[in-house]
Image (cartoon, rainbow, N blue to C red; front, side):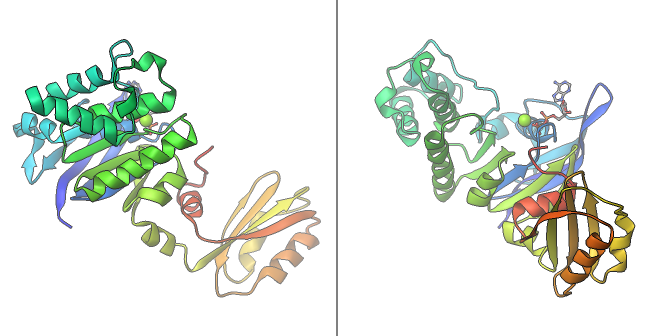
Length: 312
Ligand SMILES: Nc1ncnc2c1ncn2[C@@H]1O[C@H](COP(=O)(O)OP(=O)(O)O)[C@@H](O)[C@H]1O
Ligand SMILES: [Mg+2]
């Protein structure tokens, strides 16, 4: 797949604090590129710079090989932007909302009516086109927000957490629409902190944390990084006289995380060492409540890379 957008060494600080720190990546034509990261990771900042809504301190963006700031109008025309905060007018009809946004891209007359209908149908709001968003549920507003962003038939669609806080039905509708948009040839850049969404729609993933990119690849590639590892999650009643360092005397142990009620041991998959680990815990007077073995999932990949879960 060829790259449609190239982002090079992007940086952005707010009051001296780096929100985005030297981020570089390419967007490939026709992909669903998911940005996964917890709140405050720098997803919106990155996406807003990419959408030219925010100016970077450093770095550059190329669209189809050309610097974006040389021909910003052309770039903007090709973009559809679904911002994290709703950008719709509550007191004009759904139809008028879509018309308004599509007309900003120079669409008018018959074509404007056609593309408005098509966009509303696409998000499942055709029946509600005469209604005002003020009467809509959160999910319907989100869907209208998407209709406003896609009516002009953009090549690249940028969506910033479009499913936060909505009902499962609207959420499924949105995820299905995204797959359809991709099938029809659009390139999608999607941010989320929901692991399940990434599992469902991504063709490629960038994991971002504290303004930095910490991993990039397909689901399969990211999971493969953990393929030679196994994680034991030991729920404990108390920690007894446990000393973390002692685990590393057991063959195969790579990483140990200890919290009040949990000991998490990452170990090489091929090494049978569970009996030794249990013996060690018992010798240190740790009371074990439960032991589970975790298989590689995006969740474990994330945990492994960042040392925290997305819900922290
Ligand atoms: N307008 C702003 N002023 C000051 N700090 C900001 C502003 N926008 C974002 N930040 C900070 O930048 C960091 C990244 O934020 P953001 O890009 O919104 O993350 P995300 O979208 O992943 O939740 C956070 O620490 C956030 O508090
Ligand atoms: Mg955000």
